[in-house]
Image: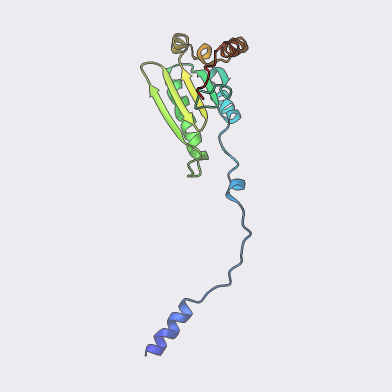
Length: 162
């Protein structure tokens, strides 16, 4: 009787021929990473007004490479725009920690913020945009860089004790 059952188990667990598939690195599969061009095209497609991109790669104090500022048509459009950005990022996410995202919003102030990897997206009403004026705060000016460089040259170096 035992022989019968062991034969039955062997037949049941018969191993099929396995065809080996070539190894494809995961980086080649993940071509849809979020970059600044994707963000700009999404904002333009969703009819955001006055889209402005500020390059922050030269600013040492910024944790982000790019800051995008845009204005919605009305507060409801601002919330929908932020939700659309969040949904598109969720679709692109492979489950890796590469696409880190954070959504901050305040309906009362008219300011929505989405942070993805090294890109910060601000959806601000025209009133909030005029009030906080992020463009002039974060824009890098060549004259300021030269003035800062001349200030650094004027610093006296203290002699070191030997």
